[in-house]
Amino acid sequence: MTVEKDLQQEVKRRRTFAIISHPDAGKTTLTEKLLLYGGAIHLAGAVRAKSNQKNTTSDWMEIEKQRGISISSSVLQFEYQGHQINLLDTPGHKDFSEDTYRTLIAADAAVMLIDAAKGVEPQTRKLFEVCRMRGIPIFTFMNKLDRPSREPLDLLDELEKVLGIRSCPMTWPIGTGDRFRGVYDRRDGEVLMFQTEGEANVKGRLAPIRLAGIDDPEMRRICGGPREDEYEANEILTQFKNEIELVDLAGDEFDLDAVLAGELTPVFFGSAMNNFGVQRFLERFIEIAPTPSARKSNGTEIQPTDPRFSGFIFKIQANMDPSHRDRVAFMRVCSGKFTRNMEVKHARLNKNVKLSKPLQFFAQERVIIEEAWPGDIVGLLDTSGELRIGDTLCEGGRFEYEGVPRFSPEHFAGVLIKDPMKRKQLTKGLDQLSEEGVVQIYRQRGLGDKDPILGAVGGLQFEVLQHRLKAEYSVDVKIERLPYVHARWVTGEGLDPGFFERREDSRYLEDRDGMPVILFKSEWALRWAQDNYKTLKFHSTAPMVRA
Ligand code: G4P
Image (cartoon, rainbow, N blue to C red; front, side, top):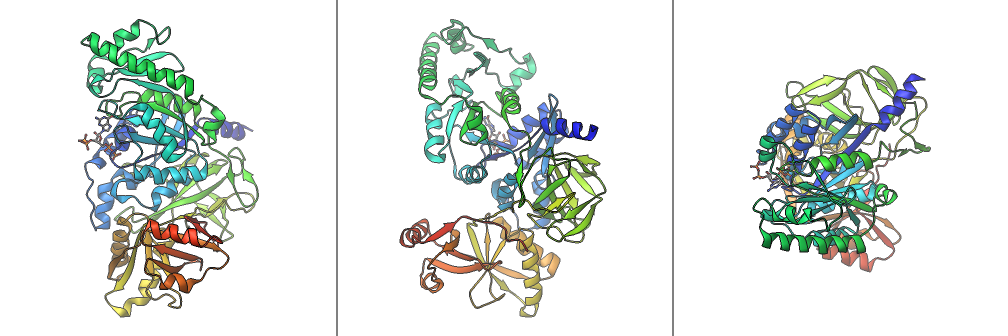
C-alpha cells in the first residue's frame, strides 16, 4: 500500500524534459542557470566547462573528454520546490547525432530555446519535428533579450509559419537590447525588472512590481529605465502597449489541453546569461508541464502508476570509462518502482535479467543507485551486450514498448578497408556498432555485406565509428563521404529499384531489415520523386523492426 502511495507521489512530482535549440542559442547557459535553482552548483560548473570546448576531433576518447558532462551524464537531476526535475541532456553542437533525436523519445516535454535575434534556426526545426511526431508539449524560451532582438510579434509569427505551432505568450518583453526594461507577466499583471546577473548578485533581485493594468502610471517609470529618459519611456511604452493589445486581441488564449497536446506553445522571454526570466519560467513550467506520461506498448497503454516496473532503452553509450571498455544502456523508467538487484523480463530475448548495477552519473563520477521512479533515467552496465536501443525491460508479464524509431540520416559515406583480410571483423564491427546506434548501415542490392553505405544524422558519428572500429575491432578504414543529403524509407505499390539505381541524383538501398531506402542528392530530387510516384510513401523515420 505504501509503495503504491509513494509511487503516485513520486510520479506526481516528476518532470522529465529536454532542451532543444540550435548551437549558440544559449542551451549550456540556460542549463547552468536551471541547475543553480536546484542548488546543484558543482554541476553547473561542469556544464560550463563544455561550452569552452567546441572543436571537433577524430579521437573518440578526446571527444569523450571534451564533451565532459554531456557524454558522461545523460540526465541532470535536481529538486526544485519539492519537484524532481530530470533534464535530459541532448548532445548538440557539432556532435549532433541520432542520440539527440533518441533522447527526445525519453522526454515528456521539451523546452525550445530560441535566440531572439535569430529566430527559428535549422537544428531547432529538426528537433521540433521529432517533438511534434511524439505530440509532447513544447515550451518556448526566447533568449538574449538583452541584445538587439527581432520584433517579438515577428518571432511568434515565425513559430506559426515555420513550425506550424500556435503560441501563447506568458510573458512579454518591455523593450529589447540596451532598452530592455524587463518582462510583463500577463497572468499575474506583474513586471519583472531587468537586471544583469551581476547587479542582482550585488543588490539582490528586485521584487516584481504588481500593476493595476498596463495603463498604470508605474509602467511609464519602468519604461524610462534607470536614466528616467522621457523620450525612451514614451517610445518603449507605446510599442509595448501596441503589442500587448494585439496579443490580447488577436493572440491565442492559454489552453492547457492544447499545450499538453503539443498544439500550443507557451512562450517566455528572458536572458539566460543574466539569469533573467529563468525562475519565472521554471515555476510556470513545473505548474504546466506534464508528469510522466502513459506509454504505448504492444498490449495497451501502460500508466506510470502501474505498480509493475517497466522501462525501455533509448540510448547506448560505449567506452564511458576509459579504464574498462564498458557499455552503458540508458533506460527510461516508465512505470512502477525500480529497485537495485530486481529481476526483470528482457522482453525481446524473453529471458530474465538481474539489474544489479543501476548507475547515475555526476560529472565524472558514477554512483550506484538503489531506486528510481517513472520519468527517471537509469544507466545499466551491459557487460554481456544484451541490451539494444528500443528494448523493453518489465516485471510481471511480457510486453514491449513501441520501438525507438530510426531517423533519417543527412550524411552518407562508403567504407574502404585498408586490409582486405579484415573484412569479417569489419562486418562484425559495423553490425554491432550500428545496433548501438553509432551509424545506420544500408546494403546495395545484390552485394550482401560487401560495400555497405553508412548513414548518420551528424557527421561526427563517422569519426566515432572509424575510431571505434580501429580501437575495438582492429580494423583500419577510410571513410569516403558521399554527396547525398536525404534518405527516405519507401513503402507502397510500384517501386522499381532499378529506376532509382540508374538515376544520377538518387540511389536505391536496403536497410538492415531489408526495407527499401532511397538516398537523394538534393531536396529537389526528393520532391521530384514524391511528385512523380504518388503511389509511394517516403518516410523520414523507420520504426524499429523487432527481432
Ligand atoms: P549553446 O550551449 O546553445 O551552444 O550556447 P551557450 O550557452 O554556450 O551560449 C552561446 C553564447 O551565447 C555564449 O557566448 C553565451 O554567453 C551567450 N549567451 C547565452 N545566453 C545569453 C543571453 O541571454 N544574452 C547574451 N547577450 N548572451 C547570451 P560566448 O561568447 O560564445 O561564450 P562565453 O564566453 O560567454 O562563455
